[in-house]
Image 1: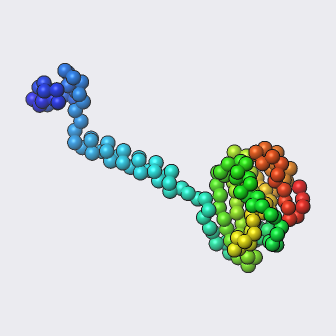
Image 2: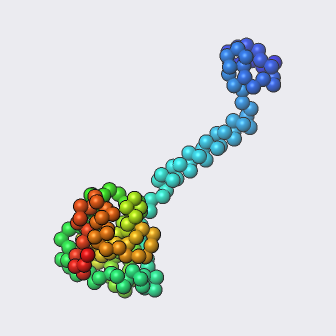
Image 3: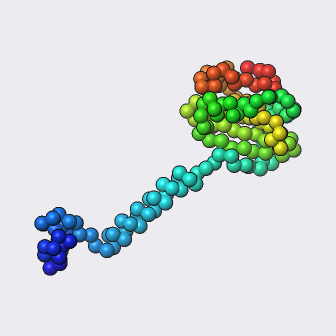
Length: 172
């Protein structure tokens, strides 16, 4: 016989106390439960804090950036007076994914804002030093290489209030 925490004697093979209902758990089961709980907590914290893909920089070789490089207009000082990417983030919220790549040989940084809820990827660029504001270069179907018109991008992203325009090429 063993004693329960309530002080009453209980059979050695009992799983619960018949008097107070206290549950008896063996040491190996307690060890496994705590271990599983710690692993689960670590996985949740890793998912929250470890999956920060925003503002990471990727070095892109000219061959890997050939498709991106063909659609990057030459960056000229004073083209845009405001940071267009910041305007979209203020209006539409944080993108589902964001990353920056450096296109070698063109002295250009390309910033991708991916809004999955709008099925749209916006493509901004600046000079390599970041001395000019982020300027909208193009819009794509999310997860695809198919471009969409600025009219379509504005339709998909009503939060931008029609302000998505390709200021360099002057096209819709």
